[in-house]
Image (tube, rainbow, N blue to C red; front, side, top):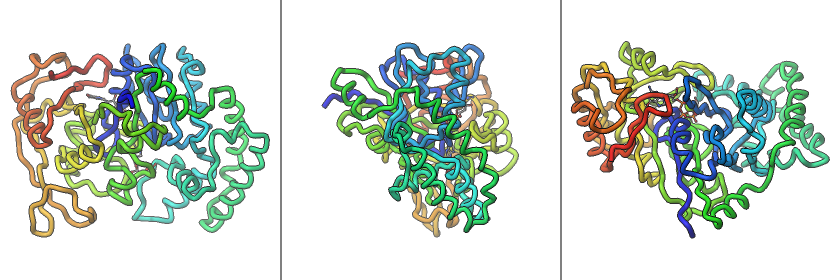
Length: 424
Ligand code: GDP
Ligand code: IMO
Ligand code: MG
């Protein structure tokens, strides 16, 4: 098998800057393929003083000559996909020519979004902090074998199938006393979106991608969310409903594991998390607020405040291990530039013992153990190669490298396409 597929994925709780990285390295590839998640993702790309946020469309869409694939591993909201496509078309991007959608991707129906709200509300203080985009209910129907797929929208009896699932969902919503009249309007909107999306290429993308591999086309698989939100390995139950780690690229695209070459792991120089759930290194204080403001840490999808905290090495090492990361990319160190000193969590104190791994029960009290390194107090956002970087910054990078036992290959120092370089 040809090792011709590379993967970009997040190593923390999402929002590491995956969209930017995919956009930057996209020109080396023929195909960019998203492999999981749905419109809970918000991938930001900045160039020529413009900022774009993508939710379902792969982050290669701005490049001519590249085909973007929405893989079978996704859950797709046709209403928001239509809006996303229309926004791109309005800025002059020929989306129809560049996009292929898997016929096996599952649909998010308006009732899935209602169910997401109903389930979250019922959880009360235990709520996950979901983006309320219908992700979990749609994946539940996929695994429960009740889901509707993209290919179904091309079938003559799609409407009947839709209304059958809808009435099944309404029964559940009634039990939760959900005001279903609130979503009456969305059924019409949904069918308008169906008519719109029917014009796009909907096909077996596993066949398409494997043919491309046979023909030596280079493929980049784009992940969403982050490794610590993985449904198997993340901080369960405070996770998303898909496999965000490298294995998810194989099931989410239908590509064999032995076609995978590089795995690019993206991590911030600190940590953020949106929604509920454990966050051992959280800075729930003035410094955390400073990082949030300086790093513009507000959700790209929901606008919610992102929680902020120090870099967590045990969690990072776990993520690197799970995905067999071969290239590390650090983003957003520019945000820390004015700090006197910076802390890095290198272990935890748990039940009276020092450990350097994430314990099973993350609800228990975990005390992070930190090392402190000097800050660099110098703007690094204009640096474009290793020689430009302050010594204290290089010390920060080398310290992290030592603790993760691997070099850091790329440094991103700002949101723009141009603000990134290799350390080699
Ligand atoms: P994604 O979900 O992983 O694609 O990340 P998001 O787009 O949700 O969040 C990352 C945010 O940081 C976006 O606003 C990016 O424009 C921005 N960003 C990416 N890389 C850098 C960086 O190196 N420095 C700074 N300051 N911002 C960055
Ligand atoms: P990108 O791809 C950050 C979080 C939500 C919530 C949990 C479950 O932009 O990195 P869900 O809607 O999936 O049921 O929410 O996961 N979450 C994200 N956090 N970045 C994301 O995507 C996220 N997608 C989901 O905040 O805590
Ligand atoms: Mg994001």
